[in-house]
Image (cartoon, rainbow, N blue to C red; front, top):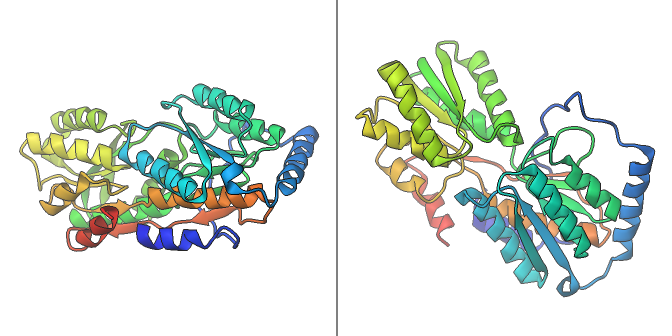
Length: 345
């Protein structure tokens, strides 16, 4: 779904029902069931939100806890949240956790002390960021997760994002097509423990096992969503495997571009195929000249924009769907202009 459509739809969704998003990974064994006191606090939170029904958005303040602002994709989410808050007259406070779950929890405490009406959060870690939800529940503040999920029984009041299983299926299928369904490949993974990293990795392996017996995943490494780190990893892979490695699935575009740069420097462009996820602006030239075999569009702006509407509905005591899905879409050299024209608007 393209950003223009998301924006148009989002403008009319404040008082309507919302549709669902990405499933969380399986609950960790260490996750505990909510206590009776936690349940009581959650009930108090609902009553508090209901009491706020009818409050003018211009009198509200929302907080956004972003996992990091170092990637273009996360900045798209921030922009979507900011634009929708501006349209509604809601004050927005953005806190960047710099990939540190402890810092994110501290920032949450700060937002609560400032009396925000709702908290939107992209968790740094699927387990370590759970206290963000617990603290919001205790304070009676609605919390909406966006983009990445949490493990266990304690979840945000609602979630807006995209199904990471779908993104991996699209990217790995495109990679399999590009290498003719056989050969050795590598996988560049995001920050360890984040739901996107876990789900995309698990989905990729499952798909390879079920559909592509002639493709062998011989190496995988943590690239932390970073272009520079991925480039270094790819250089090491080339040293070790040479042309035996025919493909790379990068879990985001920053890492895909880093891999493409290393491959180009080694004179192996076209011999090692690469696919990524997010469709950042820099991916355009890589798709156009064939350094990137295919990409997957994730509408971060749309996720952020929609999360504000969901948060507003919660503040006003309205019923919302637990999850909101914004689909991924495969992008190739043949259809890329349509997507990049949308991103430039």
